[in-house]
Length: 83
Image (cartoon, rainbow, N blue to C red; front, side, top):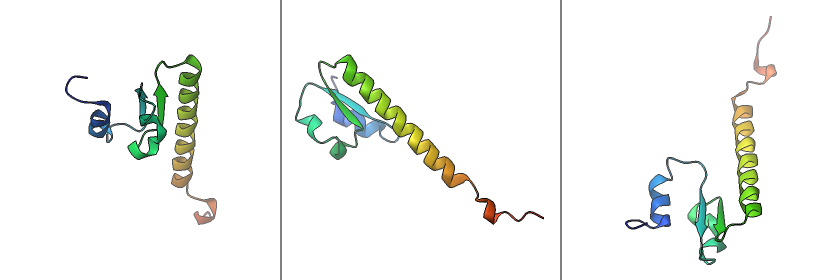
């Protein structure tokens, strides 16, 4: 990218996205994805297996987060006053 590097772009769009996966040829960037608020790093060349594992992991994480949010939004029956 001529004007921005991937880290700068990630900072610009972090409020617009829920998940972030970096692709890089530099293994040192992939050593600590949590420092960069990344969900995963894919080292180039990207294998089909690693790509699929990342997608599956992100899907499960999304499902878990949606279930957790849904459970928080449900009012327990014990709080309902039914006559």
